[in-house]
Structure formats: structure tokens, C-alpha cells
Length: 372
Image (cartoon, rainbow, N blue to C red):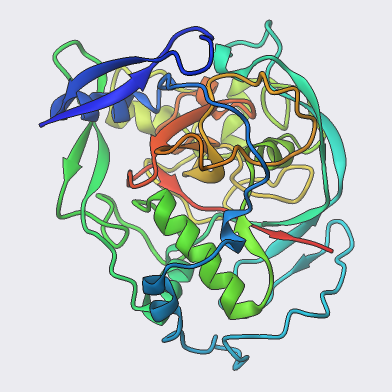
């Protein structure tokens, strides 16, 4: 099987792209390399604000959501959201018993991207620019398998089986290789999980459907974070490689990435010189929170954001809006690194692309909710 992808290594004028044909096996190599280096894709214009979770639903989605059961706390699936209440910064709340816990994050300004001196930086993290973020609520933890199960059961969503798994395998040139397993899914991602682990083997399309369901279930404006919001949340007031500083040996206190545990299972991997105690995913909240009270912003599973992937930050925009999805399908952006990511890819500025229908056992979900 052949697939055409678009690639570039430097900033080209609008519309100038390079295309290449890659084999099915090469797709696995690319997905395996996502834990090592970002894939270059076409740069497209930064369009208007696109809060996709609030966009129109397809007839199929409407039919699915019409079957939604009431949350376990007995609230109506369609709550009246006409009288929203402001949440003080730092407050933890939940809109229903099966909803993710949310943290109110204050408005602020930060520099998005990485400085040239930062170890492991990539050219897709430039140019740095000042971004202003409005206050919003962000999932305190990554969406768990149990929470995602509530969504699947309530909507009767048909989840497509099959997931790209990083298993430690390598291609003929020694590069990490992700293998396609048609029998794997979010219920069986290739390693043991409980309902308190972050859901994985979910696509961007699945993530978007989940936040739309939350919106309809609660009457509140749930969505995915924009890429700028995600980095603002991950930094939590810091300007260093990680929210806690730049010492990779301290990573195991704050997140689940490639560490000594993983190195013992997969010799030859570049890892942090510490031990987080988890080979694959860890239960959410197992590590220290950042300055905003958010957990697992570095590692555990990577997290889908709203934006399409753009190679460089050359828009001149100073707000936190998402890249317009109408101009750069099918590549979406994910952030945060995973249990299999080397330290440089757990940095706050690190960013990667994947197709909207890609499911990988290192990819998961974190939600956001707009505040008044």
C-alpha cells in the first residue's frame, strides 16, 4: 500500500510543498519516530478561530448523542447552560460525576516556543512570540479509560479496532518502528490498564466526539485545548524546558516518560537518568502537579489539541486561537510526550503532527472548557 504525504524542511512560500510516496511499513517507522522527532508537513495559513467542539454535528453524531444516557448523578443529558458561573482561578470542579475534574486556569501572557539555546529544540518551535490567553478551565488529569468508557456506552459509538503500537521494535535502519495491530484498541492497547489510567489508542476524531458529547451532556462549552493554551498550561508560569526547570533527571517526579524502567525493557533507548516506576501508562495523577495544579503535562500519554499542524509560528498572531482546520487537513497537532518519549520530547515546547484518524498507544486526551 502507498500513501502520499507532504513534507518540508524549511519555510517555503505558501502553496509550495514536496510530496513523496511511502510504503505501509514506512508509515510504521514514521509513527515510531514520533517519540523521537517531529514529522515535517506543509505550512498553511493561520485562519480564523475554530472552536470545533462547538461546531455543527453531523446527522450520525446527532443520532448517537440522542441516545445518551443521563450521567450517574441523575442530571438531564441536556442541561441548561444559560446561566454559567465564573470559577475562581485554581478552583477544582466537576460538572457531573462522570465528567473530568477541571481546574480554573487564570488568564495570562507567555512566550510560546523555545529559545535557540534550549537543548533538544526543533525549528518548528519558532519564532517565539508573546501570546495572551483568556481564562479557561482545563482537565486536571488526562481523560481516563473509565471516563471514555462512559462516553462510548452512552453514545453507542462504534470504535474502530486497530492501533499503532510502539513495542520497541526497530526497522532495517535501527529506527523505532510502530507496528499496526488490527486487534488492538482503547480497551486493549497492548499493555495492562485500569479505568484510572489515561485512555489511549484514540484518534483526534474520537477526542473531538468526546468533547462534543460532554458539551451536550452538561450544557457547558467543552472542547480540546488550542495549541497555545496547551503550552501556556504546561509551562504554568515557567520559561524553562519543563514546568519545574531544565533538569531531565527530575522528570520522574513530574511525569511518566522514557526512564530507567523503560531502558531495562528496551535497551538502547535514550532515557532520563531516573526511575518513574512505570513501563507503560501510569494511573492519572501519579506524579507531582505543575504550578496550575495540572497533572501529567509531561508524559504518560501525548494529548490531542484542536489545531492543525503548522511547521512554524510565523503568523504574527498574539492570541491563543487555534489554527483553522479548513486549511490544513488532515494533519493535527499533539503535545506533551508519552510514556515512551525521550526527555527532549517531553519539553513544554515540543510539538508533533499526526493524521486525524490515527490511533496510537501513546496518544490520549485532555479537555478544556471555556469560562465566562
